[in-house]
Length: 377
Image (cartoon, rainbow, N blue to C red; front, side):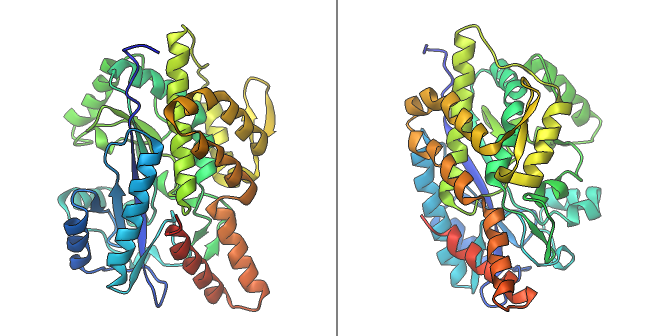
């Protein structure tokens, strides 16, 4: 469009849970050698997370979604191979189907120790994993402008990603119970609105100067300006069990960012809606995923997600084609027709019960499916 167009580079972070391949329980104390081996084979791209039973990966800065997909596939398989030598397996799910958070311990790092001391039981319950997607937006004020506009689409992105229906062996009735757990922390949920980047920084600096936070990375909103990179980081989504689902969401997010820049180039913008309304859609996405409906604020009516998904694809198709991620974007149709990981986990569990399995064995079947599907590329 012009020389001032943002780079729209993409980087994806995924958090996995490590499970014992025999018991299917979380690996509450995985050996340090596992992480050392990961660092040796994929230096700088794998990190411990808050809970010892978690492991986080991050792609490098990618030009497009296909490049990010190739890196994610390689990272998932490398971690699985290394973990397998220790009798463990990674699962891409935002909650474990039955393991108890009370049996887990956090990683011994200064930042995590401070978090655990400050948040107490709220932090000890953080046995959840997510997916974060960074989009390169070099202009600081445009980053804030997008922060305000993209909030509208956050429930749609969440609905496509849901992978956390179970908690402590119980079907929560939600597609993303992770959101409920995460919302217990302060500074979570939908982002606040700002007119400029300077205004955003003034607010952040108040919290830093008073000692409430050490830096802006402790603002855990669903969408935030990154404190480390010139990016806008989308954080609302569950981690996707299917690699192609993750890439479809990445394609949609990247394409939305380009679409909004295209509007700006033509002196237009997306309408800003109050967080009160967006919060309703956020809840509906958390509860129903793609199996329900969201509110069309302009029409003041409910619209089923299948219809919404077609509207989204049509809205950003021009941008997806320019970004080279049209195939990934169209995979949204598969997510909607097949169901997200949350629906599939329920179907496996229900099928196990109907076939005569007890509850634990049926849940073991869910873990086995998660471990297998995490590696399907």
